[in-house]
Image (cartoon, rainbow over all chains, first blue to last red; front, side, top):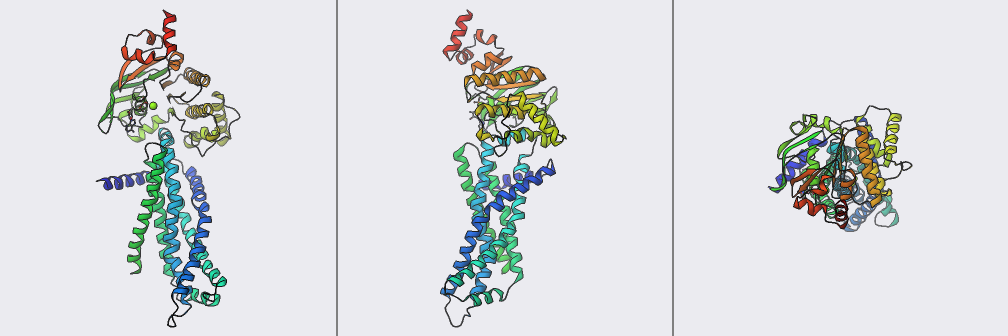
Amino acid sequence: MNILFHIGRYYALLARAFKKPEKGRIYFSLILREIDSLGINSLGIIFIISVFMGAVITLQTAYNVESPFVPRYLIGLTARDSMILEFSSTVVGLILAGKVGSNIASEIGTMRVTEQIDALEIMGINSAGYLIFPKIIAAVIINPFLNILSIFIGITGGYLAALLTNAVSPEIYIQGLYYAFVPFYIAYSMMKTLVFAFIITSVSAYHGYYVSGGALEIGKASTRAVVYSSILILLTDVIFTQMMLA
Amino acid sequence: MIEVTNVCKSFAGREVLKNISHVFEQGKTNLIIGQSGSGKTVLLKSVIGLHAIDSGSISYDGRAFSHMNSTEKKQIRQEIGMVFQGGALFDSSTILENVMFPLQMFSTMTKAEMLKRAHFCLDRVNLVGADSLYPAEASGGMQKRTAIARAIALNPKYLFCDEPNSGLDPITAIVIDKLIREITIDYNITTVVNTHDMNSVMEIGDTVAFIYKGEKWWNGNRHEIINSDNKELNEFVFAGELMKKVKANQE
Ligand SMILES: Nc1ncnc2c1ncn2[C@@H]1O[C@H](COP(=O)(O)OP(=O)(O)O)[C@@H](O)[C@H]1O
Ligand SMILES: [Mg+2]
């Protein structure tokens, strides 16, 4: 009963968020602002985790698969495909759920408890559309770029690991990067990223929008936003993997 | 004129407003007074439609607001200005941007006209030279002034203020009260003010409705309030020493 209530209210909120906006031009600048705050502000953390993830996958594979029957160039291939298939979409999604999700929930939650949402409503503005729609659109626009960026940075991280250690020679690593490349994997990764972007922004906005009480509840709502976005991301990941790759 | 007729509102089975009927008059500051938790904010938010009422009706100059669909309500809402208890300023926008906001959303003005109107409103509330401050950088009094300027930006016919002077020092509180009254008279609008401050009542209470535990217990004006023999009202009015002295002086 409780979960049905939340699902129903979530869909109702989304329906309001996607209603025709009052003044299109204003929404355009709101979307740009959100691209800046949700996307550009996440570049740093994406850079750091991607470099390290690429390096770690490369080293792990190099040290664990020391068998004469397994060619060394598979290390580069593994780094490439792991980044594309899981890390740059799912792991980056989880990191963004933590960073962007808690950010959105606390921003909208604060607006709720300080009556800023009431202020929008009383002016006759559709607060769900004004606050949530630009965030969803911004994330759906910018996250695919973050995804591609993460893939490249991760692969570069693996190359740096090859260069700085003697786990695998850089030439063989690069040879592996070119080996058996499946372009569909990129499309698959991109699709996941789009769905995750939608999940993170809409679920977090939902938790922020229905905060009632004070500062303590805002904190709880942002925790819930992160937890539920993360669970939904992992659940979607399983479904996607089974549907697309099986 | 706003007419509230037999309005009831409960939250999860708990009655907060019990069959309230009242008239808020045009060109006057109409006060709603009562203890904390008596239902003032819920009443105000029900009147402007932020809370859906369970029964009863609300009409704005004869237009049955409570029976309208959301598109029709939007029309009326653009005639309403509201000053929320905490100001409810948008904290990622400057003071000037806050006042410009309703103009950008709803007027067909050019940028220059909007700036002119926003500065006129800020001038009207005596807030000059603070355009580029963010709400967090402004004092409590400045925030209230900004909230009032934003509320009057679109020339409302109805102005609602929820405890406009809570959290302000006594001098600023009176200045804000007087400002609200001046605006009401200047523009001949219907103003409704929530307060639990007897100072405000004596200062600007053209009409006063006393809410007691969700019921309208008494109504009158600021002169009648001192001489009423209503027990609960007297407990509220004469809770402080000051009001007792006022009454003693009068007698
Ligand atoms: N959204 C809500 N949900 C449930 N109860 C509420 C809500 N808003 C107000 N109440 C309750 O209604 C009563 C009146 O509150 P309120 O109108 O805020 O009082 P005040 O006169 O101080 O403004 C309080 O007991 C409060 O707990
Ligand atoms: Mg209140």
